Length: 292
Image 1 (cartoon, rainbow, N blue to C red):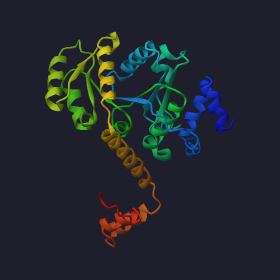
Image 2 (image 1 turned 120 degrees about the vertical axis):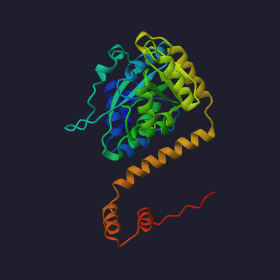
Image 3 (image 1 turned 60 degrees about the vertical axis):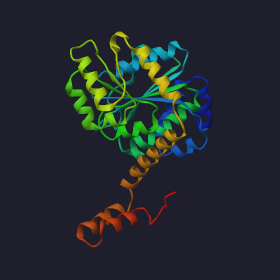
């Protein structure tokens, strides 16, 4: 089927067609697909945090709550790439078995490989597709380390950081920059020792209100959803502009890393034939943008 036929089938409820369209997002045909998609807004929530913090469990109970409210939900789970196939290591069916047979829940793994710009390029396109397929909310779950967190913050509103009790998670989150990009911070497994102290420390560190949940027992999820809704309602033109700027910068960085002239310029800088400032100007095509 061509793209128009796939779109018609996906809008008619074909999960197979929707899956094929999401595969096109990561292929050479991405621009062809985007050209026929409307720019429809869709609520997007980012879930991040260190490995083992309970992100997948939190996502699963959030999906259940949104479905109970009658919303169609799509989950993009950003996983480490397989060194052999380039695909995501963690299977969709393993993550949220309770939702596999729900036709109004789409669960898709996105590998963080560098193909076609990697996460920075694939996720905004996937979100635009899911909006065109009439999903009400998109949940992004990241592996919790690396550049992907910053890229998620560029497209999600809000970004929710999930941490566990104890000093370790908070310290690692601060080092990884998670606290800087988080809009909402959640202490999961709040029935464990140290949860109250961790929440106090995080509040002092960030100035943000800290939510405490026990995702495995579905405790505190209503408060988390309320906080997400409040943050979404507070969105404005300035914040949307900041997110758009971050998206452009992420895509530009990916494009520059594969620029055909980068290796030559780097060699000339290393040999002392060219200074790094002149090389940067040449890499950018000599373009100068005047400030407003």
